[in-house]
Amino acid sequence: MPQNAQVSRISKGKRTEIRRENERMILDAAERVFAEAGYGGATMQLIADLAGLPKANLHYYFPTKEALYRQVVRNIFEIWLHAADSFDHAPGPVEGIGAYIEAKMEISRRHPYGSKVWASEVMHGAPVIQDYLESTLRDWTAGRMAVIQTWVDQGKMAPVDPRHLLYMLWAMTQHYADFGHQIETLNGGQPLTDAQWREATETVKTVILRGIGVL
Amino acid sequence: MPQNAQVSRISKGKRTEIRRENERMILDAAERVFAEAGYGGATMQLIADLAGLPKANLHYYFPTKEALYRQVVRNIFEIWLHAADSFDHAPGPVEGIGAYIEAKMEISRRHPYGSKVWASEVMHGAPVIQDYLESTLRDWTAGRMAVIQTWVDQGKMAPVDPRHLLYMLWAMTQHYADFGHQIETLNGGQPLTDAQWREATETVKTVILRGIGVL
DNA sequence: CTTGAGCTTGACCATACGGTCAGAAAACGA
DNA sequence: TCGTTTTCTGACCGTATGGTCAAGCTCAAG
Image 1 (cartoon, rainbow over the protein chains, first blue to last red):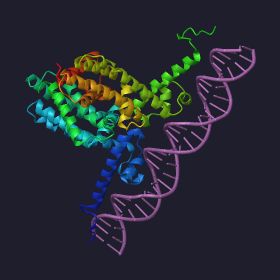
Image 2: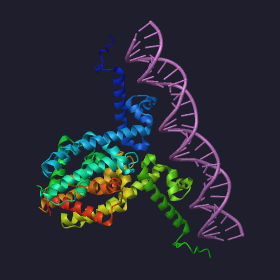
Image 3: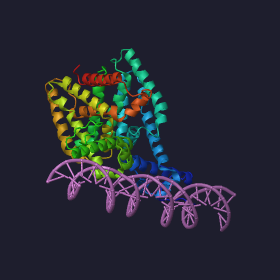
């Protein structure tokens, strides 16, 4: 029977498998190239080379550059949103905001390219995900603001404007991904070590939690 | 005598004046286009149109696109650096850091395009100002870190890691420029009003100053 | 007025890029 | 094995872009 021995793949429909595999390769390569070169600076050829595929093959899976970019941005957005689960089932700001900071710092560390693509997209006026900003993100933000406001009303934290507090959290955590190169340069050209990441996370948590009066 | 009545210009050397004027027009247009489209997405034609000049004229003043971009980035960097003057002659963290936050928030408001260009440049690995990062910015950072450490040693503030505190300050203040579009969208599509800018600045100041234990 | 240096500009060029396509190859079902 | 569907890919095309150039124009100095 046609069982390829040296390739340890799940042989659950080879067609489907090939498609999934290639789409992932392309999306990973695209995420990195879009992050490093920007949308305008990225070329399909560069993405193809990094994915190890001929350029024409990219257009088989993703009809246009914009379609590919759109998919990359949406994938990141999904990761963003799920990061807030920690926020929800928390009894108060210490646990909720603390966990949120840790989750977002972890994302900055694991998905630096994605964070940069998102930042680029927003900086350029969100040409492809404006609808998401106006629907999903707006709803999401309103929900968390309500939670924070509840905590304020219950006297569980200092009366801080929930909106600007959220912006501060986003800004600080994403900064470690988006400005990673600058941070690395100021770190003697070396990427942050595990210990330094912990230190960064702890510093952010401490300053914020004390800043909202819960430490 | 050839005195143009309807143009109120200083006639101090018309050649020099024309050159200064045009360079400024071009640099202003370039800053905006680079910010909105990214380096790769920006075209000389777009910049020329916005500056109200023929494209060929741009190449007379700036030989290449990269040279023009380089000048834009350097101009912004200068503004960054001078923002820290408020930092220096302060007796303690309340005045120093408070003033620094206000200065940087004001820059975010006045120079949103410049901030975005800087962010883009760093996100893409600082291809044109890496030397600045390694020299000027590194020195600058070391100096401010020393000041903060002194305050910590003197017991004027809580023992917060100066490096990460600086990153937090940069992140939060620049966020209001770099992610201005997102903030505007979440503000009902309206730019922040004067009052909202004040509110933002105050929130940041309050949370940070309380976060470092000086309120 | 004359002259020459600085400024302006339409037309042009080489290149690189996104995208297309026809046909080969591989996988699949019967 | 054979026919069909899906995947793969080199070669190709139209366009847009950064950059060039030569000719013309403006201005100030002599």
